[in-house]
Image (tube, rainbow, N blue to C red; front, side, top):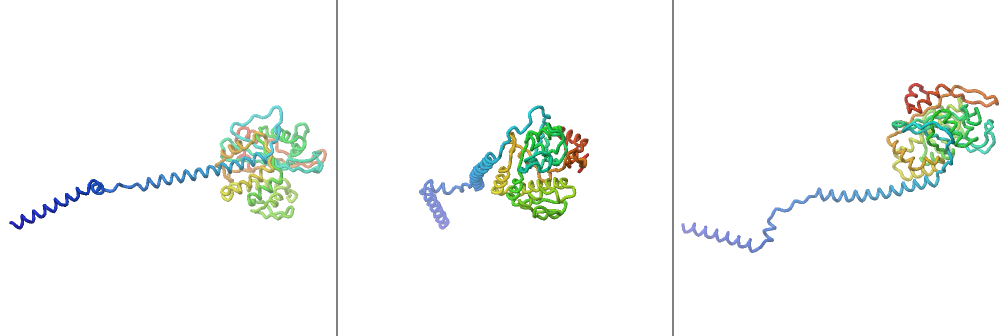
Length: 361
């Protein structure tokens, strides 16, 4: 028993000594004995990431602002404003929500009376109506054949391309508005050198030809053709190589416009600021627009069409009815009056899609 009592006394003494040692270490030892505080690596990473994103977003915003500012200056500096682009007097009413933009490819030839029609100087060698419906689900591009025999206000019956030479843009607009009984909201004119420069700025465009032909030293195959600027200009201008002359030419011009749209919307362009800038510079250097078609209007229109793809571009030609010869010996393209009247109604009611279903080309 004495041995057991001695062992218990020794244990008690050891325990008391341990307690005294812990107390002598003070509160720091007690604090160190607490469980470690949980760190929050996720929150730390999140805060760091957000900070980085804010920095990146700031850089992107500044870069985009500088880039867009450069494009705006290019547009303002290079683009020519057409004074008094629209005719005076009564005009057709606008279609709510829709836009009709008259696109003109001009040929500023200096020689007198090249077509024998009494009109000297430049002509609207290419004439297209871009109809943008209110729902913005598609874009309709209609070619008006340059030799269409129409009423030109103040001049009587003549080829529609003579209106440009006789009265400039206001007479062209007036002639087209009377022909279609529809309001033209904006006009944009580009000279043919612009077709060439636009193509080169995009690094070339791909067009689909309905037949093989040669023009101005360039050979084109039936099917897809990859064109540089010089070849593109030859492609859109040629008509003598075709049995139906201007009919194939306007189809080629439509194919070119589709090729430009494909190139402009391609990943290789939209992800390359340098190419975008080159395309804008090349286009605006040859572009003339009405005073209302400013950069803000174009940006708003472009934003409203942000969902459009090249497959949403619908091309067609204003209905014709064969050819004829005028009393003074001019060969012309006759207009299909009844079909154009129904087209006019479709433009005013913003139902070009419905008209095309009933009048397939």
